[in-house]
Image (cartoon, rainbow, N blue to C red; front, side, top):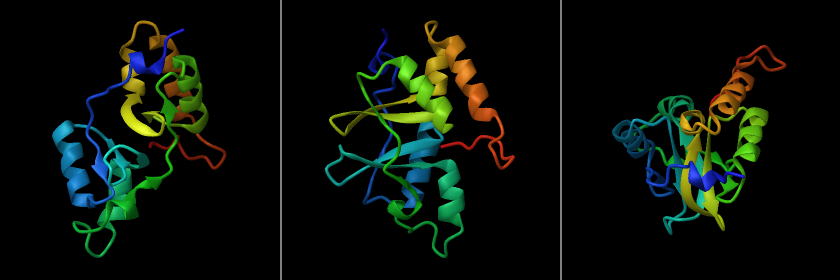
Length: 149
């Protein structure tokens, strides 16, 4: 059984709770990613995740978007998985919760992130990732297309 640590991205951009939304946006731009995990002051413990959508909806709309704290824009207590979680469990979680990316932890310490793209690139999980993406893209009970985290 393949573990998620075998497919995750370990060298990733992240923010700390001391960063602001501008710094998060620059990190996303530089890394060409749509989300960055947020860790506490120790630089290790996962406390949130901020997406490009969060920056637009919770950051730019504020009076001083460049200086707004990242903690005001992030999703607190994000869905995450431990590094020894099976790929099948992660795909099921992504489909059920309509997530395109999930931070990976080891004892609550951030060690990586896994995206549907990572799973789609793997020969072992390509077909199942496509199925999860299909589930994410379906309309919810309110007629909205699957949301993106």
